[in-house]
Image 1 (cartoon, one colour):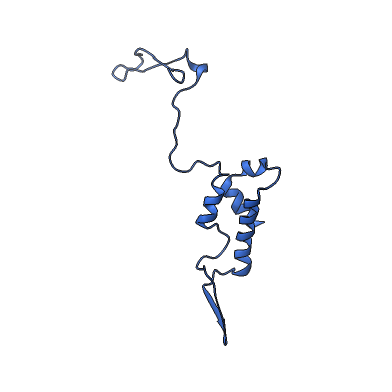
Image 2: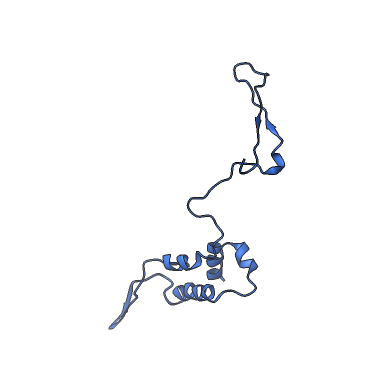
Length: 122
């Protein structure tokens, strides 16, 4: 359950809700996350008892987490904006005939010529 929540948090809950069937690569990553915790819950690098010793390829992190490779594989499903994006500054056609009142800072209570809201592409 917790492994699923880590994956859902990465791709976004809306995406997970829209899936009729979970994609195979997402299921595999979820199983990998769960297996990592099951087989090495403390995030050990090595362990030994008497003459028996064991060493893991990866270690150092404990708990439920996604590796950078798993995050990369899940990125194609992600809906969260990461990094840079463009933010529109127009208000759409609904506001094309509206104007913004501009207050004169030197003379409180008086207005300057209003500024129009322009539709996209204008």
